[in-house]
Length: 241
Ligand code: GLP
Image (cartoon, rainbow, N blue to C red; front, side):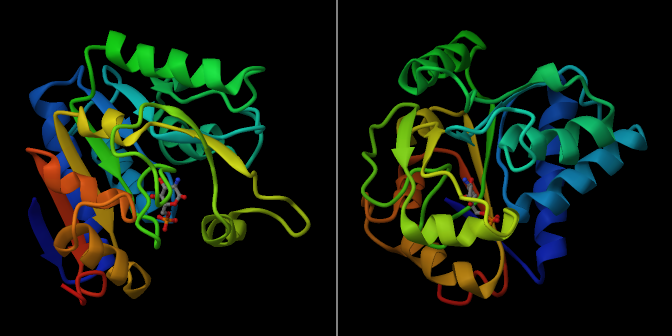
């Protein structure tokens, strides 16, 4: 694992955006594994700014997002489809069809997960996989106890994760109980993994990911087995290393 510690969340997001941009400059048709979550918002803002100023072209890449809530159609404002339209496709003037996500409203979620896994393989595989980190050590929606050999599948979200993500939902709106997520094995197949974590509330999970045993208790610790994983942190997230 290569660990980069930047002074603050802005500097950390800028570094991640630069790594993505460098990947796209070298290979404009790269396949990017993409992530959602508050941590990613400044990353996409910087990438969009770089695209607008002509430093990088986004219109030939293909995106495959990590996950989507089961039960939410793409038009639902809290769906990850909507997140990607709002933070990347619309501001960058990108055809949203370039950004693949599992369909949360598919009639058979398990079949949708299998279709998605096959689509990733058919694309030639992911060149660069962007990842956030759950405060409980999850990546994508691979909650603690996820098999380290798991493919894309349906996962039940645990209480802490639903509580953490409730801030994105309106009052009285239920956070979905299940998600379709790339598996740990899917993530480990990416040619380069790039995880960003910022803030003191991630420090415990960061320490478990980097210095703990490789264990399903902390799904992100599987990245220790990845031959090309870069972990970008701000000082607060790195405080327990
Ligand atoms: C969500 C997503 C993850 C994300 C994580 C952290 O549950 N499924 O992909 O990394 O939460 O989110 P945030 O960046 O908002 O802390």
